[in-house]
Each structure stands twice: as C-alpha cells, then as structure tokens.
Amino acid sequence: MPLPPLLLITDRRQAARPLTGVVADALAAGCRWVSLREKDLTAAERLALLRRLRALARPVGAVVTIHADLDSAGDADGLHLAAGGDPGAARRRLGPAALIGVSCHSGGEVDAALAAGADYVTLGPLAPTASKPGYEPTLSAAEAGAIAGRHPGRVIALGGVGPDLLPGVIASGFAGVAMMGGVMRAGDPTALVRAYLAALGPPAA
Image 1 (cartoon, one colour):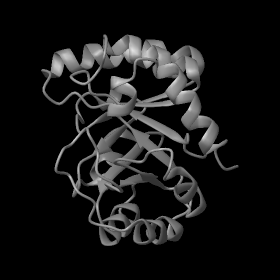
Image 2 (cartoon, rainbow, N blue to C red; image 1 turned 30 degrees about the horizontal axis):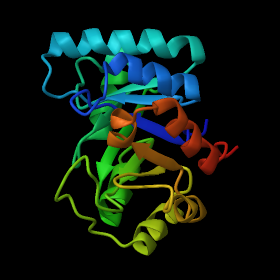
Image 3 (cartoon, rainbow, N blue to C red; image 1 turned 120 degrees about the vertical axis):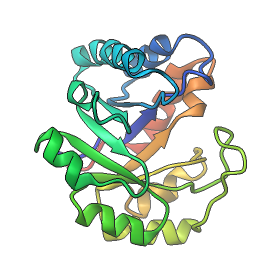
C-alpha cells in the first residue's frame, strides 16, 4: 500500500487554535496521515490526545502514528522513531501491520533504517524551517533527491519544503512531504492542505 503523500506532524505549541481543530481541518481537506509529536506531555495526556485524534481520523480512513512513544503505539497505526531508533525492535513489539518510520539526515541513515525493517523514513531538513530555527540543511536538494531515488515510495521529504520545492521533490522520487508548523500556524489549514495535495498529486499506485 503506498504511503499517503502528505504527512502532518503535530505541534500544539505552534497551533493557531486547539490542535484537534487544526487536525480536523486537515483531515477535511484530504490529509490522510497524521503523526502525534507532543513529547512534552505526560504519557497519559499523550495517550488521551492520541485517542481523540484517532476518533477524528477513523471515519475518513486516515492513518495516525505517534512519535517515539512505543508504549502508546499499540493504540496508534504505527510509530515514528528518532534518528538511530531500532525499527526491528519496534516491529517485534507492534507486529507486521504497524507502520514504522525513522527520522534520517543522511543517505547512510536512510539505507540502514530501511534495511533494518522500517517501512519509510523522513529525510531532511531540505531547507531552513521556521519550526526549528537554526536547523540547517546538511544535504543539497540534489543529494536528497538521489537518496530518495534509491528507495522509491519510501522516503518522505522533511523540513522547510514549501511550494517552490514540491516539483523537484516529486520528480526526484520522494514518496511525499511532511509538514508541521506551516499547517499548525495557518489561519486556514484547510486551504493550505488542499494546495499541497493538489501540487503533490495522488499517491503512486
């Protein structure tokens, strides 16, 4: 099954209004993949929020994954691991149906994560991003594209990917793009998500 082309990563601290409302708007606009990344919450608070997001996502068939929290991942559709995380261990815990990903910043990290059993990786940052000031790209667009091209359908572009970069992202073999702050801060998340989805086109068959 191909990955949805737009991954929305949450950050309630950047959100212009309550996170559940932002996510609901993104889902209404056609986003079909949300990853909960609220690491400063307690485990109980994060699990409760995860369950609220899944209740929003379920009626439209969207996937909800969670960042880093293996204990709560059984209530999600999968788990996203930090750089250097062990996808094999997560797979043994969560089973074959879980969607497991890893954050990567180099070609070597991408190759290793996918070889170890990750379903997908994020690769970036590809450009400076307002969500993480000072978090500068370590790969050129051409280098990142070459890495994605080695693993078609499994690499998600991350970090500062604005509309100007989308054509190159799509053409070079990325499976899609991850967004966080742009959607969280948007006055109209619905319009922004629709614009990105229109530029990305449908997921590969």
